[in-house]
Length: 249
Image (cartoon, rainbow, N blue to C red):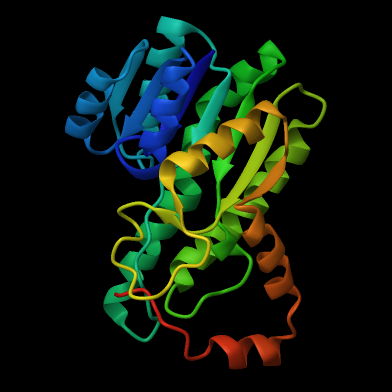
């Protein structure tokens, strides 16, 4: 099994790399922090190729993809996990660049990762393209407009891609986790319901991919809560969340 993972240097990406390495997979790990990737690669007991690259840099991602496929052939699984999150407020002009960075990483970065592999996977007639979205994409969260927008866009993009790949043998899997214990959430100044360790979420994602589930919310409690929130009428949702705690800017 050959697996590509972006955002692999920490958090959920690191946990996924460890889990697939334990399964004996050949890994292609991509992240901006090459030093952390090298440390991780030294810890893993499998064949690992590391690529220091930013998913916003399409040429760099294409170069990494070409190198991996030259070395190992077409991957079986490509996981677009790289993502960033910061509190944002539209009234602050300086937050505009933050909006741009989050959307470029969480949405365009996902496209940049999948693009170099799709033709090869279609030709092979097999494989899974896995996008890590979020339950934050179900409704707009106050103070997290950029992050919620990026994850809502990711969910819609992945659905479009899934339909485009229909009948090709390539599965497109959308994963919407809730709160995970990672560097991204460690400074959140509010209670995070159903919080899970990254290792537990990684294990569940591996099962989702293996079972060919096309859309999954993790954990199951969030799979119940998130659709209910989506169905709330706007006046009630606004009243409930207008004064909710917000992620720091």
